[in-house]
Length: 510
Ligand code: NAD
Image 1 (cartoon, helix red, strand yellow):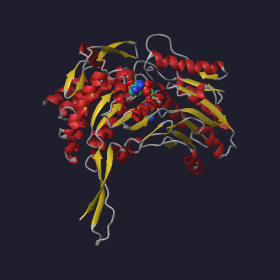
Image 2: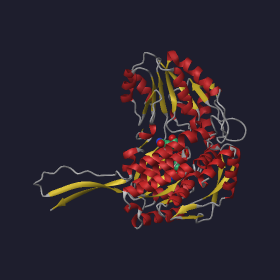
Image 3: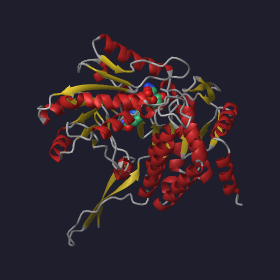
């Protein structure tokens, strides 16, 4: 029996609980370290911070608390690898080969990676194994494929003209990658693979609330032979390590996913330092428009599944539901019944349908926004409050009678809470779109109808980077990003990789 087959069999026979316990023990014993210039090292200050399990509120491990000095070292390592190292000079095909090898190594590590993500974020194992991991590997392989296809253009020139011009794309340089905690593995791999495909070198600053999968990716980069200094990972807080990275004068681009408020501060830091480029994937408050002719069972299942996926901590989740008045009650009954049947528990438990929120602060914020709106007159159909006991659990929630001015209607709650508002059946498409567009955000919008006239009419009226009709599909192959204060720039595909390049125009005379 080969070694890897033996390991596979071992994995199969070992009960999942034991696997998680072994992983937890390893994490508790692991010294806090980050990756700079190909070396695993503690923070320059030697300080560390605690990473906790949101399902229990207990300690998982400690991570190195990187600061200004560590960012300085990491940016220097990335710059040196960019200028002197082979990465930016490797052929696209070679970069593609190494990125494909990285995908293979991570795929072989899928079980540990999934448990690690479940312990770190509290998200359910099934959502990670069926969602985050395959999506992340798909993005990684897709971006790897682009490495060999980055190209410029050559305009046609008359044959008699003694000149020739064209443009090329070059890697932009050193990229700072700053990611949130709600999909740590996916966010890091999406950005990392696009930047590396383009020939850039990177400094990753993962969220301090869920840094573990990023560190595991760093180990895999080492393993497959990505040269030292090409991928650097500095763990630490946003205020220290994140800010130092965004203000660094030798970083060429910051690729950020996170809240709108921090996105704005990153843009300001970029403007006030070296005018580095920014890609911003920010918050959302996405509308869901349900028409009387829709398949209500399917719509109810999809709406609940989105708002409880990652316990509502999913940027594109539809959280403002506008239902035609004649079917609002039927929709509410269905959504409530689905929520009533959900099993809430630790993400690592295979029977869990919805895990906890990420931390006490995030849960407290959700409770405050919802409580404030209930006091102002919103009605609770179900939930509305945190669950008592250990871990940061929150009841799946449905509210009605919330005005468009209430906090639940305007602010991104980032928790498992829906606001449902009736719309007169006779309202015009313009009136429906105006309700949907009444938000500072424009990340995603969903439509439920069987009538193509309605769907098509709304697609053009909705202010969103993405419109999903009747549940949609094939998300991972499309450009993803927002309009308005949901950010700008697009991830995935050619657009996503091109963002990490700079265009150079060449005019040849002879
Ligand atoms: P956040 O903005 O608080 O933090 C995101 C990252 O920024 C973290 O790594 C954090 O340490 C860092 N950071 C914080 N302050 C910083 C500063 N001053 N300078 C530099 N870096 C700093 O967001 P979060 O709470 O981790 O994530 C939730 C948010 O992310 C939500 O708003 C959600 O909508 C958004 N999100 C958007 C998308 C998208 O694709 N549009 C995807 C996932 C999450």
